[in-house]
Structure formats: structure tokens, C-alpha cells
Image 1: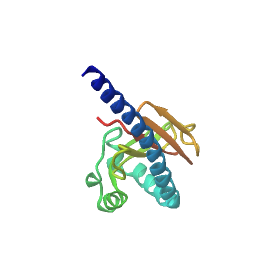
Image 2: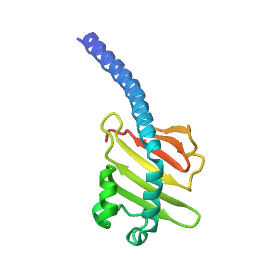
Image 3: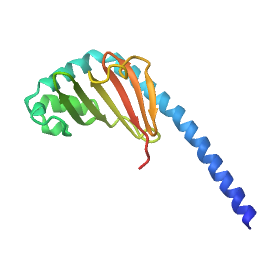
Image 4: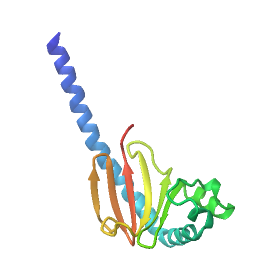
Length: 153
């Protein structure tokens, strides 16, 4: 009976490791697709970022999660059309950041955040990628990056 349990355990562990590797490759494919879609509309995203950074409500709620419904109608509508759940903004003179929490993905991606930032220029370089456990960062270029959190919890 113990031998049977050992065989089952080995099978489950092997299957788990294989599926994690497969999911990692799937995540990279999905992120590459999202980067391509973003690149086609980068000018729109830059205009949206500028509107957000200039918005009075946003600047009175820096560092807090701001939902599209909290904003004026035109800005709210644009964020909703782009699949944005909420934004978080930092607008300091030495570090500006607009983080868009998207609804663009499902498992195996987890959450995918699109971020424009002047705080971490190295991470925003086109082609940059790194991992921090369940967190993966992909540089898009021109101060843009994608952060993927694939933690299943």
C-alpha cells in the first residue's frame, strides 16, 4: 500500500511541475500578445496617462486605488472600454507612475497590470524581463511595463 501511495505522489508532483512549466510559457505568449496590442495603441495610452496625471480628483487621491466610476464620465468611459478595473497614481516631481489594474487575463496569468513610470527606468526598457517568485516584469519601452502576478492565492 505504501508503494502505491509513493507512486501516486510521484505522479502528482511530476504532473504539477510539468503544468507549471507549461503555464509559464503560456503566460509569456499572452504577455507578448498584450504588448503587441498595446504597442499598436501607444499614442492613445500616452494621451490617457497625461489626462490622468492632470486630473484634479486623481491628484487628490494619490496612492489610492481609483475606480473608473470615481472619475468624470469621459475618462471613466475610456478606462472601462480599455478593460481597466482601477488605477493607482504617484505624481511626485522625481517619480511619476500610473498603474492600470486590468481585466485582460484569466488563469494562468493571474493579474496583469500595465504601468507607466519614471521611477524604474531600467525595468521599462524594451525587452527587459525578470521574475520575483510569482511576479514577472516585462519592459515595453518608453517608460511602460507589464507586471504579472500569477500567485494563485
